[in-house]
Length: 117
Length: 205
View 1 (tube, each protein chain N blue to C red):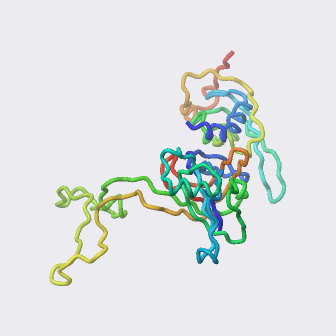
View 2: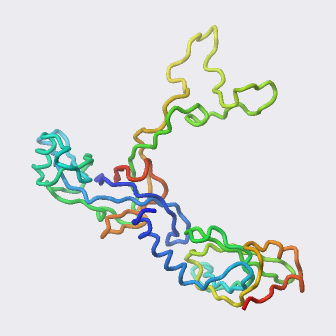
View 3: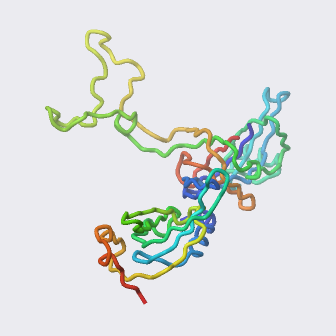
C-alpha cells in the first residue's frame, strides 16, 4: 500500500488501537452517541460479541448480542464509527470459534460462556 | 474555474464528520508551476498553463525546454491549461492543494483504464440473452438484431457494437473535497476517479 494512504489511515489505526482488545465470546459494553433532535446523549449496549468482520480495515464491524426480556437483540457497530464513544471489556469469554452464531439457538443456562482467564 | 494537475494515489474509505462511511480517493495535487499565462490581448482568451511532475532535461525537446526556461522552472511531465475565472496568476508561481477548501465540489478529469476489446454486455450494458434454455445455443452475451431487412436494409451509423473499451478521457463531476492536507499536497475526494493509480488527473473547481 502506498505510504500516503497509510498516512491518511494513521488516524484510524490509532483509533483502533485505543479500543480494548476483544474477540468473539467476550462481553463488552459499547457507549454509543445517540442524537435526539438537537440533544446528544450516550446509550450503553452491553452484550456478547458474536463476530468481528473485516478486521484491521476501516470498515471493520462487530456484532453484539444481548437478550432482553427473552428477546434476542443484535446490533452491528462499525468499529471506527464516530458515534462510538467508548468500548468497555466486561468479561472475556472462552469460545472455540471466531463466529459464535450457535449462540442464537441457545437459551438460558445453555447460552452461558465460560470465562477465559 | 481554476484547477490543478494531480496524481491519483489510490482509494480507501473513511468516516466523514456526519458519521457516514464513504469511499474516498487520495490525490496528490501539485505542487504545479505556472508555465504560461494566456491573456485575451495576446492569445484571444484568458487561461493559465500549469506544469506538474519532474522530467529529465535529456528527454525534453529543445522547444519545450525553452518554454519551461521562460517560466524559470525545470521541465515538467504533464502540462495542462485551466480557466482563470476570478484568480490571477503570474509566470513561475506555484499552485498547490491549498487552492481547494474542504467541502468544495470539484470535477476530476482522467484517462479511464483500458479494457481492451469488449463485447456489448460490458461495453454498452446490453442485457444479453435472458436464459440458457428455450433454444439458446451459444449466444448468451450476443447483441441480437442490429437492424431490419427490407427497410432500412442497412445498419444505422453509430449502432452500438463490440469494440475497444476504456482509455478515454472521462470527467467525473461534483465530487466533494473531504479533506485538504496542505503540507503534503493531498486531496481526499469522495468517490472514485477515472484512471489507474499513479496516473495524472486534472482537478477542476
